[in-house]
Length: 224
Image 1: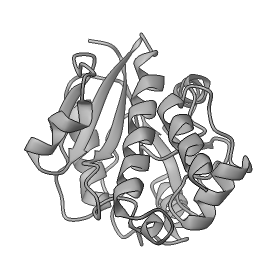
Image 2: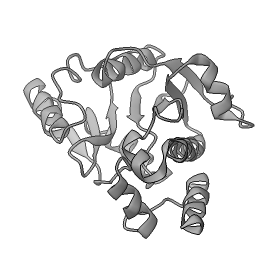
Image 3: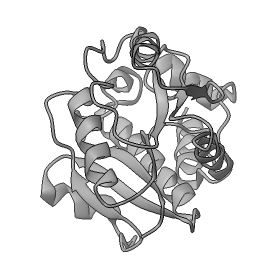
Image 4: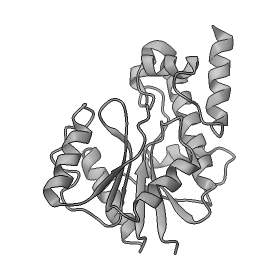
């Protein structure tokens, strides 16, 4: 068993269910396709980490998983369902599950960070050599990545998820517990129409590994 693990939180890319704030700009079908492209590219980046076990925390109907993978073999990763009413419960369950498999460093990320690269993940793991917790802040006040060296009871409780308070509340919890934190570079994920336009314009950097996303963006530009 590899000592390091990454959990990717992925939603079934069903039209009208994902990236809903992009629907006014892209429409429900294209918003779901855009999310699918980013999720597939995210997995491509992480697949290259040969010293790291890869897990997908899947949110959606079981029968929606196979169309998501398409011709791509999922043999390089392990899947388990997201469990819990909110993001905090789901994060807590995912970390407990993966730490239970005897990993010593575990990172959780979303699937909508177009600047994601293998060096960023390696930097996060390196940070866990000297800190119990590593966080990748996002510009909206939340975070795109969190890594732990062990389960931290209560870390994901009493957090106002999907608000600008997420990072500060998490930092306050860690300070109260007395766990050292290392912050990574701040990046911007893509949730809103403004985010998408910034990605199209190049203001948000697109990692070179994000091939499917690049093709989607090219098609969008061509259609305009």
